[in-house]
Picture 1 (cartoon, rainbow, N blue to C red):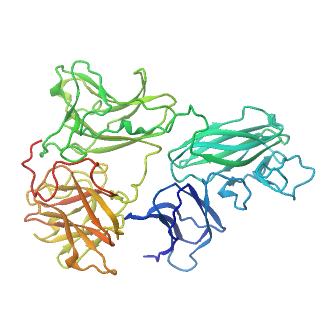
Picture 2: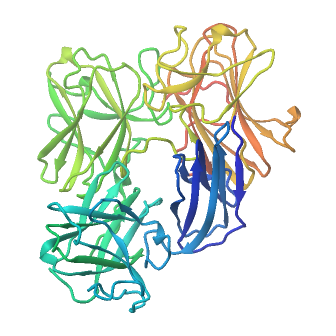
Length: 619
């Protein structure tokens, strides 16, 4: 593997928002990463990463939100192997305020970036060197000729509506409040001036345009901005002709309070979340001829699986047994979501026994008067009896609610359809899990296989495991994704496999580890979770501490385990699977999550500790 080089900052106690500016260069192959290391946490949190080579120095701007906890910043460089690859850092600055702010007095222009166009561009204006014949203004910051601002003029505009774009650094953490700036416009009938936001996928949204044609002095603008996901602010000017005048811009600043008191605070979309453990949350159904969606919990068996949340909890089931008519339409309504937000909706469904899938489950957006606006998803032919994840991103100009619809034309065509674990967040659906989580979708997360004479590998796979009557039908994350398991037919009874986390730092206070495990099969062996304490890079075997174990067949469902532990020194967590007496002993794990703090408050499960068999529990 490539060598890593790490630069560590002093201990920082920055209570207010700050901006880290990096001037860097990557030559050939390599990567740079900036990490935040909060005091007392097990994990470093990656704030920024770059891996594209450049012939020149580049500027990165990374927001540091206010925090009450001291932390350190780590700059990690990994040059590519071979000759001619190098990484360079020219400057690291931590400045008070937000990265989006700028008065354009520094040479680096706060990381603002001009999208180069041969004829029309944003330039730095002001200073004594300018043409005395120019009609451009003094700057706003210092109100004299020595200050600087950004301007774009039409002198070289050749074609109709040539566009100049000035982009802020991309925000790196959620922020909402008031964006302020000053501008001047001359001969404004010949130009168009707008402020857009642009997200990571390249979608633009106009959030402001001037209400006056021209200004003879600097004019203050204040516009509310909501950035729950990364965005750039883009100042765009277009000209009709070479006589389109100029636009000047200065003193961009940001406040976490909205400019206009009547602006609503940023919306919390978690009102739409529901795991159906305690009830229906804010979901309700149209009760026409009896309820179609019923909250149930089942004892899993070879024909059906338990819920998605814990394996032993509750979920919603649409089922003809609860209705007294041969056909039905079951609509489950969620709470109303405000307009003009981008939402990521995630839910899990499974089906059992359907002959026709056409109308088994569909998802609509309804407006507040219960009129269907759009069908945004419908079920396709799918794996039976596997919880399958659906991720959808949507945005509407009116308030909408999500409505799950199942239609049964007649009794003989309809089976069971189930719903669980609905969540709604702001922004696009994330592509990768946050720090401290591993779902094995993109790889092994840096987990290590520990091997010796009687030790085998955990295998990363998707779909059903090869041996019948053992192992899961699909993974826990997506239903069609990856998980880790031991293939018992390759092992002897009593042989084991060790999957070891990357090194974790010790910390004061409890840590909560949760994961999902699958132990189904008549010959299932033992799954243990061990704590390995590290001392000077070595790991004495006698220092392993057993945190948790399960023995024998547990369920045909994925089950949730939660472990609270404390360790103040460097350590690793080991998942040890031991093969049982027969080949029907496949053991699987998925969706590992480490969280700082107690497991209390996270959804409890009806068993814990070392009870080795809970098949007798009825629920």
